[in-house]
Image (cartoon, rainbow, N blue to C red; front, side, top):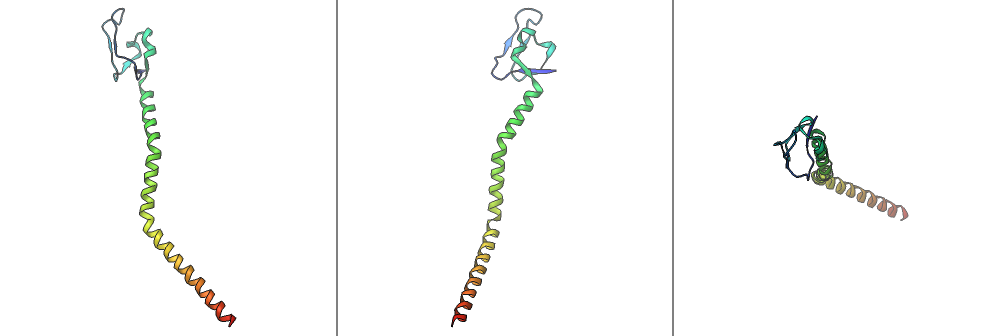
Length: 108
């Protein structure tokens, strides 16, 4: 399995033991057998942390992208909707006016 230093953990060098001279740096990937057991707490699985970061970024972008897409669609539809509403309003007004005229004529 592959591991990398957890975010916020300092780079470090091993100075004694079987891993003496080995350097551990942020952004580098290491095999489990290349990490001293006493330092394992500083590492996390490389693949899962990358997927978590990507999914977090996507989740954070979703509302912004969704809202922007919705606004763009509304802006694109606005002239058509305005024309439909205006025509509909005119038809309703003309129809209502026609009914009132007929009522007025029938009362006479």
